[in-house]
Length: 213
Ligand code: SF4
Image (cartoon, rainbow, N blue to C red; front, side, top):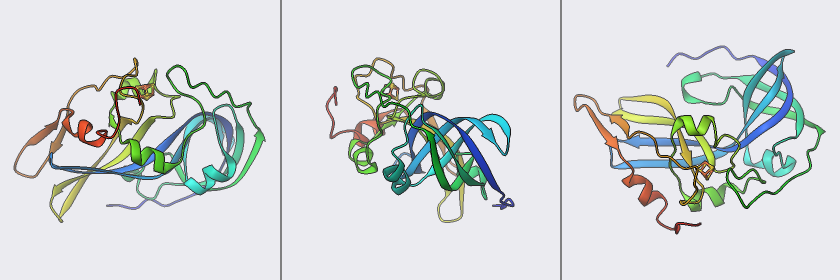
């Protein structure tokens, strides 16, 4: 895979969503493994003085230290991606954080989308997730702490080559009224066409939880 030259950037902006960040490994229909690696901050603001919406990957330790949540105005530095196909967030290796304005936390836990403080990664790991329609992720679910856009690697030719893409998932209650799985997802394998993930892996991933958890 071709590496890109990296550049350090300075950013500032208002947080519009905080979501878990994860890597997913798929192998045909036998395996879908989720590894949580931190959080993605989605911001509306400026990168190197240019107005834009953008996302920054941060570690769990950084989230624990700063308690970022929707409405905070922050600034910091980060780097452009070395391998853009592997990372959904626009920037990573973030640091030098400063909270310019801390929003008053409104822990609204009674209706979806849930915009309260994000839990630790161990909570997401315990809960497991279901596929979430990508249009729903972009719209009604975007501010929800249970929404996730994952970096996905598909084992295409075992030990030889992988394919990469991004997929949206939901760690939220199974009975959330906003939930929509979307279309089954093709999982290709060399010389064998594609199998389709139609949802039964979701049941396995979330089997510890009841409908309203
Ligand atoms: S479907 Fe999932 S991500 Fe969307 S609002 Fe409900 S719990 Fe949140």
